[in-house]
Length: 115
Image (cartoon, rainbow, N blue to C red; front, side, top):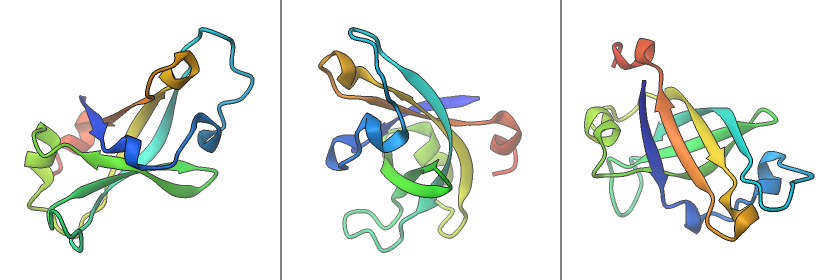
């Protein structure tokens, strides 16, 4: 399984509430895994090979950021211009202790071999 950080997350307006994190304990960093997808964004004005990361919450995709251009996943999938890639995203709620939340995308090895 390949795991990388999602970049550009601070440019989205998502909060822990967006993904159903409720009744948080003080000084606790909650963590939850979600089904997600990597979506080619060929119309992206800055990078026509950009790969957007969407998390599914309550059946709807929510944009959380992008694969890093410096990452192995971006390098591996940049040639795929139309294929949506299933993945998971783990959200770590560091905002509950005063920092930015962390989003990590993971590709299961069974899917990794197919690309």
